[in-house]
Image (tube, rainbow, N blue to C red; front, top):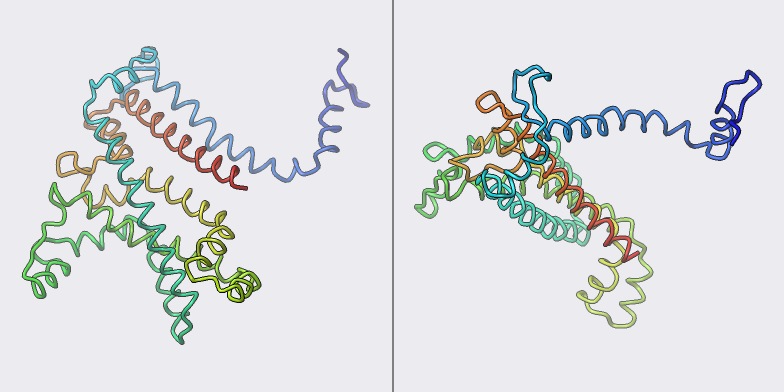
Length: 308
C-alpha cells in the first residue's frame, strides 16, 4: 500500500491532515489527551513494570531483578496476611461509607427541597464547609475532638450520659474514620441531589397529584427514575474515593492501632516507606487497588448504561 505524501513529500502527513478534517475536534482535546498520557498512562505502565521486580527503596534500577508474578502470588497465597485484611476493611469501608452518605445525603436534599425557610442559603453555605476543608485538616480537627481525655465529644457524652469512649482504640478506630468520612462527604451527595431536584420539571408531579399518587409513589416512580443519572454519578464518585481513602485514616490512626485501619492505600504506604522499602511488592498491591477501582467503576457505568 502506497503511503500518502503531501506537497513536500513527507510520508503520512496527508493521512494526518485528512484525519483532522474528518475529526476537527481532535486538535481541541489533544492537550488533554497528551496530559492524560503523561500523567496517568505512563506512570501506570511504569508501576506495572516495577511490580514484576524485587526493586527496593534506594536501589539503582540495575540492581533490581525480574521476578515475574512472584509479588502477586505472594499476595494471593496468603504470605502477606495483612493484605487480605486490608482488602476486607477497604471494601467494607467503601460499602458502608457510600451507602450511608447516599441515603443521608438524599434525605437532606429532599428536606431542603421541600422546606422553604429564610436561612436556607446559610445552611447550603454551611454544607460547603466540609467539602472545602482538605481531608488532612478535617482529620486533625476530628482527632482533637476524639481525644479520650480532653475531646469535646467525650465531654458532652460524659456530661449527658456519663459515657466515655476511646474513639481511636482498636475497636472504635474503623468507625471513627467512617464517621469523619461521612461528615465530610455527605454534603457532596446532598448538593448534587439538591441541584437535581431544583431542576426537575413540575408537570409530572402535577399529573401525579391529579391521579392521587402518594408521596412514596412520587418518590419511587418520578423523582428517583428521573434523577438516576445524577445518583449514579454521586455513587460512582463516592465509591471510588472511599475505596482509595488515605489521608483521613493516616492522620487519625496511621493505620492503627495494630492494623485496625490499615486500608489498601495505607498498606501500600507501609510497604513502600523507608521502614520496609519494598517498592516491588508495594507496586503489586497498588495494581490490585487499581484493578478493584476499575472493576467497580466499570460495573457502575455498565449498570447505568443498561438502565438508559
